[in-house]
Image (tube, rainbow, N blue to C red):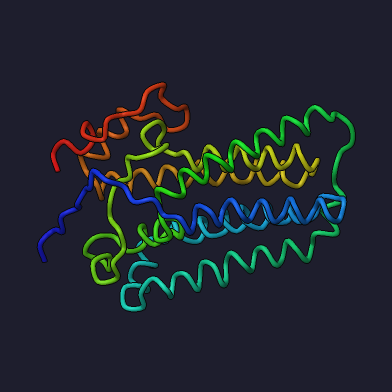
Length: 251
């Protein structure tokens, strides 16, 4: 089988549904907590969402080869069922059941920290909407990593494109940046120690994940990703956006 060609498009599609659903989920949680007069929905949502992400990444990245073999004939919906239906919802349900125990683990005072947390949360959700809008469901739900070229991407219409648009022109991992800021902001706003612990676990998992993820992307996108590594920082944004033509100059 010949090696598939990765196509790059100068025009990026804005994916409305994941972007606005991300924003709406926080508005619903904050609105619900305002009605009940205490922080319940927001901390459970953040804990469930990012706790689920940790579980998914720990189950997926170290076993990418095995998952690809298992999913090749089953398709992306089999992965979505495992990822969302089992790992993500299972983690969220467990944390929700245990919520009466960890929601009370909080601190008092320092209202200025709550204000700082609200600003961090609003900023990170806003940048997250921008980043998720560039990615689309297949990438957000990790299908692009599990169905690479020649291993199911073509037959299942999984997009295979190095995204150099929106916030990805400034920093390689805008979602990881905003994830960490979002967890910290939610922790400060709701005064929940459990979210501080979650942030520590997320960072520890991310250290492992990035090593595997960048190695995988180097293999998949070759020189284009090597140039992206050289021109765009991992976590600290550039002051000016990188020109996508400088990344995709050989495609």
